[in-house]
Image (cartoon, rainbow, N blue to C red; front, side, top):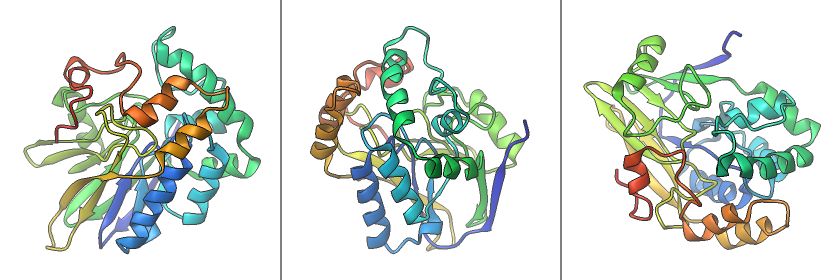
Length: 275
C-alpha cells in the first residue's frame, strides 16, 4: 500500500514535538497550554501518533486534538482503529503482559470513539516531512518501514540508518517506544520527544516532549518534562474496564514490566532519563 506523506515545505519558528497521548485528556490539556504559553502555533505542534491508548478518555482526547488543530501522523493505534481491527497492532509478543493489557484498553477505546473521531483518524498521514533550519526532517511512528517497530537509543545505528537513506532526511523524529532520547551519528539525528500519555519508566509521573528551535538560524532541540493533573487521570482510569497496572504507572512513573525494552533501557528503570 502506498504511503500517505504530508510535506509541509519549509517551517520557521519553534516546533513542539510530542507523542503517545494515549487517551490522556489531562496531559493533552497541559500540552496545549504549554504551546499557548510559549506562543507556538498549532500548525507548529506535531504529534508522532497514538493519540488514543491506555487511558480513560479516548473520545474527549481526539475531540480536543481536533479543536487544537495540531498536526499528527497515524500511530499503529489509529491505523487499527480506523480499519476496524480487533487489536492495537502494537506488535506485542502474543501472551505477554502488554498483550493481555491491550485486550482490555483497546476494546474500551473502540467502544467510546465516535464516527467523527474515526473519520479524523482517516485523515492522518503515515509520515510528515518538512525542511527546518537547513535540515530535512521526517516524522515516523516506529520507523519509516514499520509503524510498530520499537526503536530505542540503544538500538543499533544500522537499524536507524536506512530510515535516513530512504527518506533523504538529516533528522528522523520517532515515537512509539515511550521513551525520550536523541541519538546522533555524524550529521544525522534520531530524535524521540517521548510521550505525554504515560510516564517514561523513570519513577516520575511527569511526562516528556521536545522543542525545536531555529532562533540562531541553526537546528537546535531540547527535551522537556510536562507536569499535569495525573491524579485525576489515575482516578478516571479506575473504572473497572482498564488495566489497573497502567493506572498505577500514571502515579508511580514505573512500568508494570520491561518486556518490550532492550537490556540497556530495562536496566534504567526508575533511575531517571539519561539524555
